Image 1 (cartoon, rainbow, N blue to C red):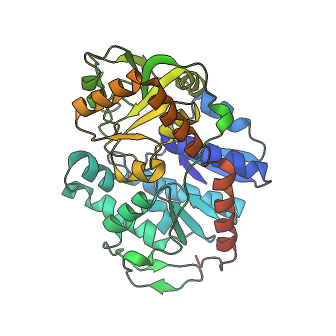
Image 2 (cartoon, rainbow, N blue to C red):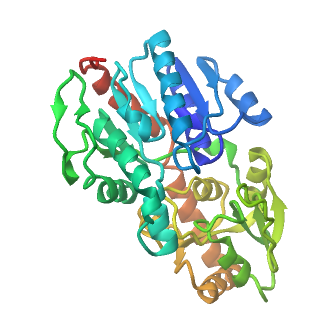
Length: 379
């Protein structure tokens, strides 16, 4: 299994690895993007049955990544040759086109083209054409494709099914496929993400709103929350890095109280005390932080986007992502009406408790079993 170390995919991968290892599955986890932090290394070492193979290759969505993507692909192929896994589980796209002998699963967590469309309101510029082509190759060559929501799977189909790979792709057994249409991703399915409820236990609620995310991330849209917080008679705290990794600029807030980057256990304690969790996202293919906050008993106020509607239904309050006044009204109403707030939090937690690691791992184990029955690829 691959994972990056710089975003939410790490939390997803460790949760899945924990559940797999508890079922007696041995997992080799190949990390990319940045060195493991001390907390990440400690978390990984605590799982019996998990072996970590660390690298720092740049990820496919980063600037000028292609030399690193190629080198990372060679590294992954060498790991497969040495380890002989039953399935190669990729939490990225481009390496799906590599000549692995084992069946390949590609999981679509997010992508640049759908991010750009949602955040910028327009198609991604021509400079992402190579990214589009390389991602399409990986998807079309995969033995199976998974996404955490139907909205994300539909986005991947919309952006990449119409892009024919530059060369024919190999399916397990060595059969060449012509470019395929929207319905032709093999075994495409939705498997929702999950978190352990015991890591996010509600406590006595206090009179503040919490949000979490990188302050500079336009997708998380925390600038709208900062604007909405002006004049609210309660505190709005935001956990997350303020330093932009590219420009080095520090994002300042005017009306929210920045907490900086918090280790996961510390953030979980903040969630346990917060009355409301606000995530006015423009783009969020699943939303692990909202799941964590709901487990911790927070009422959810979320951006009104298809993926979050799909996950939460009537268990959250939805607001247009770019309307600070609507967000402020929703926050003020819920904070001023504790019965309604507590009822919304209860619905959110009930819904969150259905997204269990057990449910997630059963779906993946079933998929792995079906893939392992396929013929091994021809290199």
